[in-house]
Image (cartoon, rainbow, N blue to C red; front, side):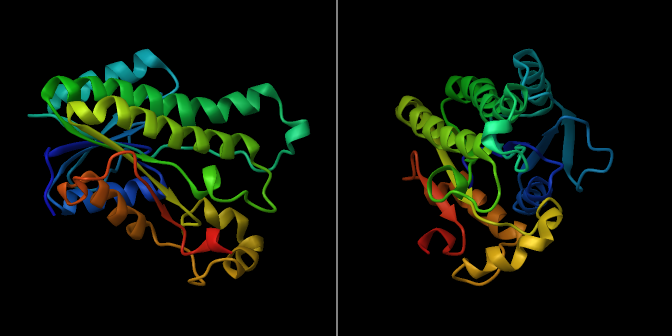
Length: 241
């Protein structure tokens, strides 16, 4: 697998998928910068951890500058950070709760894409992969109550397509993956729903984080050189039911 650029920044790098993603990409020979709200005191080997508040434009811009001070070339981007509120009915959700989810899941993606995208455009090309969700377009989760999360992830896919059209002709490919249920520590908080969810998955199991990482690596690499604005759904067939 080959890559146009040798450096990549990963937001949400300390999370279940994010950490495995960083490990997978370093294994493929890339220099990885892991970005999260708090600097990881024990990042995977070879990963440089930096703090960032994705909801604040100045913090994102400072993180981009810090990454480029350490990098020896253009830096691709994977937006993996995200939060969910799935215990509050829509009619009871406060605007503060709604805004908190959208701030990370959508504004954070935009700010990250804008910050790193500017640099990639100036350097003549690169790749950005946004992590959306099957919840954004394919299905509405049940029995979870997560209207803010679903709406924010739908917006991520729309943002991805918009950026792809604007930046693709200038050498920056922007694509997205939309995972289904992935076996992570966050998912383990809902063990009482496991059997109900699995019953709807054609393959009969949850995804492993490394399976998501492989898909991200594909879209990041030159193997996907003709993918522009693509949304790759990885849900084990859940959305087919």
